[in-house]
Length: 165
Length: 330
Image 1: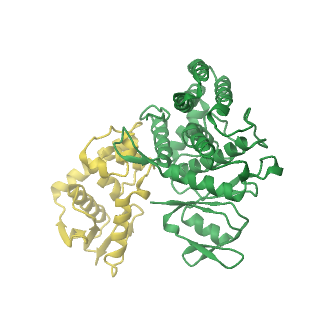
Image 2: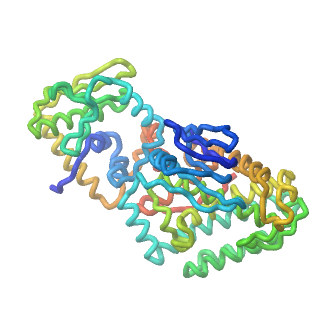
Image 3: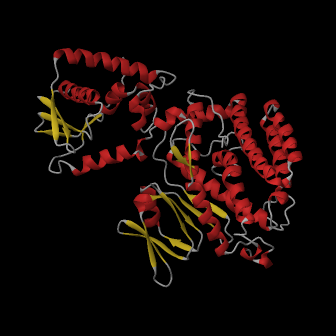
């Protein structure tokens, strides 16, 4: 196993689009001007002002905020691709537990629609996470990028023009 | 939506709280909405302090500077925030390996000359009788594919441009004394216009390259070092016919720019402020003009086409999809 810092974003992208993951790790980032990304940033900045936010753990994962080192929160703009968000939170729980932090559960916060969702990490999930980490490593060291996924989620992606031109 | 700011007045450009403020000697000021700023062009005599530059740097806003004569001096180019080691390595490898370099360089000339041809065809259909020019350029274009090295490719490019510029007097309805392209210094008004407009395109390319991870100093057609950011020269080749030349034809044919916009005693070398402003207004407008992109199915502005060109180049360098220069399709 190569020693690679796998961030929450990478974990999330693994579920969203592996091509995006590949370009992201190779530092071809296109997010800075995307309206959805800017909106997400604003939402993040304007919600939960009382919490200590953006907790960087072991210089690798950046968790939105953690309540009493027990409940970990991830703020999202919308519920689209919720599956990927849930896995991202699971990965955070896994990552922190591995470092001896006793995280009980995770919460996905949707301040815009005033909803939240609890996320738990099971033994089965842990196994799966380890497999996924391996797959991520495989993608990252690939010489060439994975193919365009041609899905309906592409239209809203910051890489849309890049992939389809 | 971000904007370019063109500042003509003399004065001071300083940071004032969280804006950049341009103050004229008479005390009038203009605040630049930094959140909406893509880049800033300075045409007047402006004093800047490091506080302003630091702020522009922090916000990643390039500042392009023009001298008293309206010629491009250089750019304040903020520190690169988005860099990709892998891409840089690929960019350099494609430069140092002759066959790879030539392939990209050919794609630039292929597209640039195609766009030149489109311009001529347009005017030929408007009774300018340019059949001969078209045929000549078509013939010359055959030499692109067979060019064995950059030097001979540049030769083909030079011949195409020569034939192209020769037909400008038939395209331009005003009485102009334009025989051939002369640089440093331009010796008549058309040459002055070309120099000015080309430098605008160059800076626009720089601003667009800046937001991608491409390194603007590594180029393929032009040799790196020809100017500091030679990749801008490469990419602007493609857009000069589409944006620059068309702009010049339209300015002259609609008599928006005439001899009166130049200082006569300067031998038409010096473009008056009023002339420069008119050109910039039109330039900005044409950069914002949109077309429906046939591959993306979206409306994109002419300026954005430059960005897309960068994306295509990145994809080529990363081994994703072979680069083909932008060709006018409408």
